[in-house]
Image (cartoon, rainbow, N blue to C red; front, top):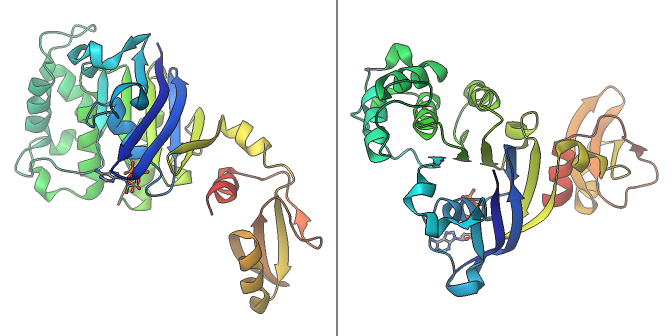
Length: 295
Ligand SMILES: Nc1ncnc2c1ncn2[C@@H]1O[C@H](COP(=O)(O)OP(=O)(O)OP(=O)(O)O)[C@@H](O)[C@H]1O
């Protein structure tokens, strides 16, 4: 199974939101990391066909196992599960009623490959996202995290081959963030899962591959380990006084700032680092990678 983006571009008026993106997704979890406005939602909206591509060859193409998704039409939509950024669902619905409604819209009927009826599939999904106890309660009274879990469950309806999650942890507190991340980590690795976020810790331990998107372009990509290895010689720590912090901030990308007994320890990331800084080698992480490319 392959989802291939070929020279994908999208322009809104004078803003080029995506610039000539080519990349092939295979089964696994992809962290799509980028600051606000990087083009993550645009990429997702093109894959889900919620936004029209630029006209003609200028827009590029998206192929699912070699076939243009626009030609596959509803067949392609049937294999996609999509969790949108906005929680625009009906507050008066219960999770169960909402999932039943979404199953109707998606045309999911009869029994699935495991021989489960739609009702059984819904019950199983509610169990997976830990909402069985509130299956008949109104969504309107739910916390942000519970609402996100309802959205995740609807994206999983019909066991889609491709799962697209647009900032699934947006607005959640740390505990709920971890819960959502864990549900995603436990999903089958036979799917292509795209997880768009601007929060490194969301994907740090669960992504098989990471794409860094900036101003509509992929500026770096690889497995987390590959990206971390490229940072060799670009991360250091320096101990300084509070007065010196501002000056260093002007010249270098600054990560963690920690109070230690002998002064303030700063993490510096960049191609050129001060001589007096001590190189960090062993515990470089994706936060350093993010800082290097984005700050
Ligand atoms: N409908 C639109 N009309 C005009 N410009 C748009 C539209 N949608 C997105 N843009 C612009 O395209 C660029 C990419 O936006 P996009 O929403 O894809 O980024 P993003 O990485 O998903 O950011 P966010 O996390 O804020 O959603 C931005 O400059 C944005 O202002």
